[in-house]
Amino acid sequence: MSDLLAAMAESRQRFMELVGEVRPELHRYCTRMTGSVFDGEDIVQDTLAKAWYALAQMEAAPPLRPWLFRIAHYTAMDFLRRYEHRNVDSASDLQGVADMMESREHQEHGPDGERVEAALKVFATLPPVQRSAFALKDVLGLSLEETAATMDTSVAAVKGALVRARANVAAANVQGANRADIVDGERLRRYALLFNAHDWEALRALFGEETRLDLVSRYQRSGQSAANYYTNYAAIAPREELRAEAGSVDGVPAIAVYRPASSARPAYFIRLEWQGDLLARVRDFRYVPYIAGEATFTAA
Picture 1 (cartoon, helix red, strand yellow):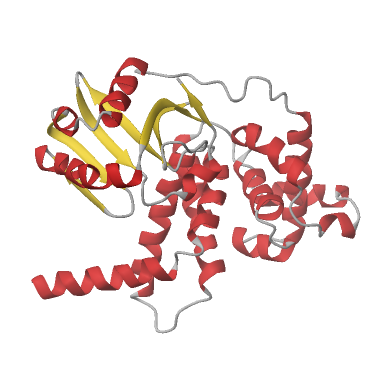
Picture 2: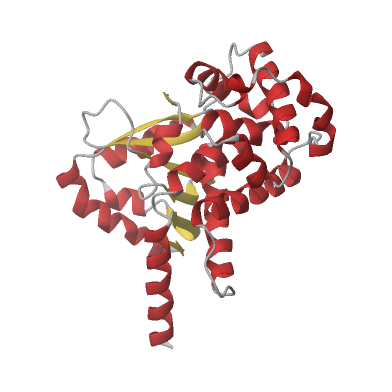
C-alpha cells in the first residue's frame, strides 16, 4: 500500500509541475468568474482534480492549455449556478446582439488595460456568460475563436456577450465597490500580533480537535496534529522575515503575509474561520502566491 501511495504522490507532483505555468492564468479567469480570489482558487483546485482524474482515462493527452480552460469554464459555471441568485444568460440569447459589435479591428484587439481595470471593480455584477467572455477575451487576450471554443459556443454569441459586458462595465457605478467589511477584526489582529511575535505555542493553542487546516496545493489536516504546521513557520519565519497584517481581501477578512517584512505588497494570504474562541479552519495560501497579484488588500 505504501508503494501505491508513493507512486500516486509522484504522479500528482509531475502533473502539478506540468500545469504550473498555466495555473496563474486559470486563477485569473476563475477569480473574475467568481468575484473572489479565494473562490477562484477553489475552482482552480477542482479543475486540476478533474483534469488529473480525466487524464488517467485517456489514451492520448489533449492540448493542455485550452483543455484546462474549458474544464475551468464549466466548473466556474457550475459554481455560479449553485451559489448565485441571478439569471444565467444563455449563449443563444446573445446571438442577436452580434451585429452591434464594432469594426473587426476593434474586435480583434488585445486586452485593454483601462477597460480591464474598471471591470475588476464590477465584475461580480455581470451575468456569468458575459463574465466569461469578458475574462477570456479582454482580460486574458484570447481570440474570439479561442474564447468561443472554451465556452463551447459560437463566435457570434461571444461577440454578443462582449457587447453587453463592455456596456455594463462602462455604465456601472463603481463607487464603494472596494469597501472593506472586516468581520472578527479583533481576532484577526490578535492572530497577526502572535504571528509577528513568533508565539507559535499561542497559535497552536487556538487549534481544537475539530480545527481543519488547508495548506493550499500541499495537504490538508485536522485536529490538534494540524497545529504542527506552525513548526514549519518556526523554522522559516526568522530566515524569511515574514510580517502578518490583519485586513480584508476584496472585502473578505484575511491575514496578509509580507515577505520580506519591509515589502509593500503581500506575498500571500491566510484565511481564518472561527468557532467560538478556537479556530474552525485555517486556509494558508503560501504555495499559491499568484493570488496576491489578483487581489486588493485593505489593512484593518
